[in-house]
Image (tube, rainbow, N blue to C red; front, side, top):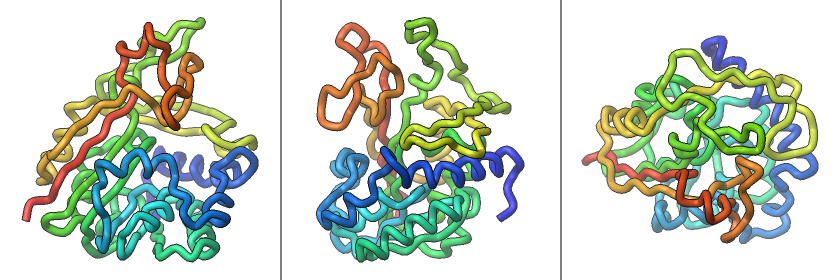
Length: 274
């Protein structure tokens, strides 16, 4: 698929993360093979907002190597489809589905073309954590979310809170360091390591865009979806800062004197009107 050069750099970056995430201290896919009841921490956290999926069709947008997608298939849907723009990630996801016997189909597509590429509608669309910072145009993203939902279908989303984006650990202090408001130019990073796994990323260049709260909500509303619920969370799915520690389940939190200062993550539920 043809991508904007900056998005193509991101795809190369995610392609090169796949072997790292499949290796030591990565996503530990064998857990899903060895234990047919294992569900990822991500899906377990989001289940209350996802609700009862029994008998429903679910599409997982930006599914990466399929661990959350296989997890979704284990909590009741009649069908699950995973979508991602990285061909190596989809190959790894298909291999996991085959080894676990999961009823999951995987499709290669970027988010801007997902509705046309997949070509059908679903009861539920799920996307979670580390999703929307990798592309600049949220209106196109939200239009594809709406296009993948049947009338009455539900959208469930969780990601890093926009208010947490600007913060960085600098000289031992967590301080506002990046911009909150949207800019046309991305934050460009060259990181040879990933958030999981021990290996080096061979295509380290990545481009990220900030998306303030208003932009995210207005993109969803502008796509014709009805907002049902917005929640904010004190915990984070990974140790984003060195000051975070695992205090409750699989979530990481600031110490008490900082915990009420910055929201770490947020969730959104929306519905496509009938």
